[in-house]
Image (cartoon, rainbow over all chains, first blue to last red; front, top):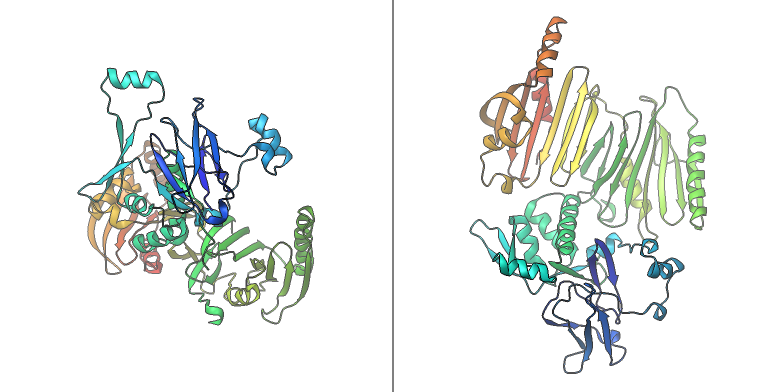
Length: 229
Length: 300
């Protein structure tokens, strides 16, 4: 199953199930998301409204040529994923239902520690980065050119189209482990060995760091399998 | 050890200490020596908890345990969970009443009042339904001590182990990822113990002396330093005085009432095997005390 955690408005939203494909920070690109056969219930097209509310839609289509995959094509300005299941199509609590109309009432999704540790962080494929001589890492993040004012400002003042984020040695190590294969748990374990800090400290630091990256839409989270004993 | 559990890491807080496996860590503490709580979590779902309350005279531990279990039962009822529990005099722990209960988690523990220090301690290990709670509880709670034999309390959490005389009360604690501060006070003497992680990253651009003078509390002091060794690790020994005008005024007043001068002594050292930096600072205290505290720190 593919599940993504989106940090939209700093509230994590779990997108779960086959109908809820999603990825954070995808712009001007198409991305194939692999799914297990059990999740592909039928061959059909899904639609999702852009999270930036520009009114356009992103299409997700069952990829017959791929191996049980879905090809998701996003509009140019699509940033983040929104829930695709209509409210009546799934079971929901009264509070959730009311929350659809009154956002303040909407219950906050809760991630258990176990779920958080088994999540798999994935780097935003649009980002470029390079290592510095000191072992630090320089991320090149494209500036979001959503509004006309920003586009005009970039053109008028010749602002750089990318902003740079420098990660220190430890941050760089975590970033390189966000390759879509390592779970948060395995990143924590590797960082424990590397930094020789206690597990709890590393877990707290890595979680905070990954949350910060997710808030800035530099990484997305895929829900992983069950934690190995 | 039974079930592969190796309780080799010491955890100590407010005079209570116990040994837990190395991958367990302190996740919660509150209160003081009179009344408090300590929680230690395993990487899985097992949790060890200790609650203590100082009593002046002998108390009816059965009554206290009943009150505690009633509270747990009420909370379980609120959550609509079936509660089953039993209490019996303990065969494993001397002079204690042991209890086992099952609500949404399995719990085994004991309550006892120490005849020496009069502390009433409730200690328990809880876990999910498929955890070996009984075995783990038997092993961990066996190591629980509610007072020290030599008058020195062990303070141990997140890789910092230090011993201080009982008279020192914890006045400030700061537990952050990669940084830990414990500050103690006994009348006029103040002791601060700090521990930083990621020493290799910290000391990449600085020498230990440069870093100690610029990034620690020593930057606020008028100080002198010498470089040397502590526990076979590179160290910086510092002596200094506080600079604030209020301190100057206080020092004058203290001189009038013949108190000890406001002198600060400390040592900062880099433990390479554990990749940590430790600092011990004693204000208005004897040099001998500083040496004893440094000796008690287990840095690797």
